[in-house]
Amino acid sequence: MLKPATPLLPAAVLAVAALLGGCGEDAPPASTRNTAALAPSDPALAKIYDSSCKLCHANPASGAPQTGDAKAWQPRLAQGGDSLLDHSINGYKGMPPMGMCMQCSEDEFLALISFMSGQQVR
Ligand code: HEC
Image (tube, rainbow, N blue to C red; front, side, top):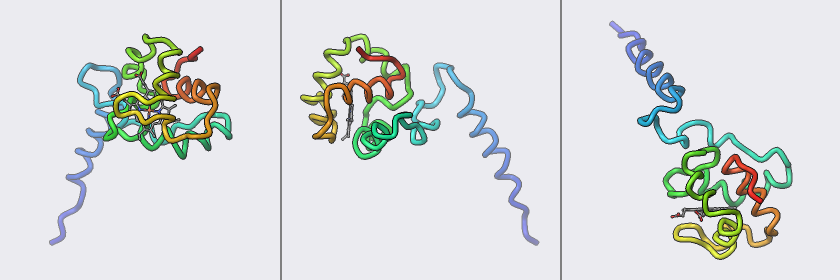
């Protein structure tokens, strides 16, 4: 007799429910939400993002603050835009200089940081 695959279903539903659960302290990192699907609305910026920042900022294993994870960005934003820009250009711990976008301008870095953090930076 073949056993129906239904016993798997409740577990899957629970997992989804847990992901949608939201803001609790024990919620999974925001990166398990739809981080990979987020993109800047400006097409040119989206292209840059796709080939640079996204490689790490939509990849939890990198240790980078994830795109759309307001909590992760909060303490970073608190440093101020100048510091974030400086760390983007010159690197900061695991953050490589220029974030793998060698041709990016300061304005583009600021726009990318604003997009990823969800807050207008300078
Ligand atoms: C190779 C992986 C990688 C890429 C590509 C990358 N980052 Fe990062 N980024 C990191 C990591 C890791 C951190 C966390 C560093 C830490 O605090 O330990 C980080 C942190 C940051 C921070 C916060 C720095 C601070 O002062 O707290 C900013 C801003 C940032 N990245 C911007 C960018 C931008 C903009 C791009 C794309 C142009 C980008 N990153 C591309 C890995 C990356």
